[in-house]
Length: 249
Image 1: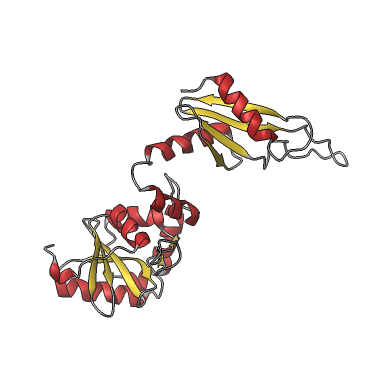
Image 2: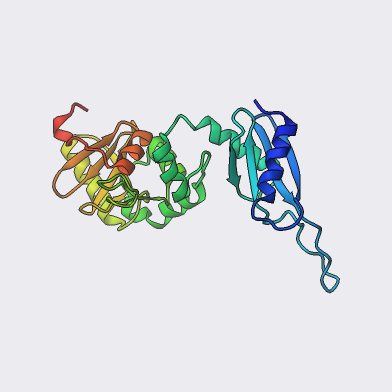
């Protein structure tokens, strides 16, 4: 547990790194989980009488964790907004293992991510192709949180990007994805909704009302995971998965 004075010292050390001249002053905002620090720059002079953006606009910002003292970089947002996002970040730390979280965050995911507007647009645009398929609550929740992400897969040596990339987007190819969902439902008696695609094959990713994720590949149909979180981990790590016929659903 670090004090405000210790946090201020760490913030000043961070602000001075790579910054020639005197140590910059910092603004420090305290919240329950830590401290938010940003460099304090002189307020810009008006140009031709026009006011300039505040000096804090676009400035690097870090959060200093109260328990560990660890510094993490954050976007230049109002301090209360960063505090809220950091709380979500901490709450989700146990949700994904560190290697998977790193890939997710580089892809643009963050706790509380909400793509509702984009999902509604997709569904409206491809309403004809998706007609007859039920948008389960599990499908909507997965698309709202992960929709639009491209998730690289670890290669044979464990490096991201060395395997088959997955795209979480329900309407790539529109009718093709819908057709695959219909065929799968007929074959197994399990209605599913398009979730995305995978470069292996290429193949389609679908999700059922329970949140189970399947991969519809030309070679076979595979069970990716019992829920979206497990499926995301499996897709990123490239873990071996069973064919649908070999498991009890």
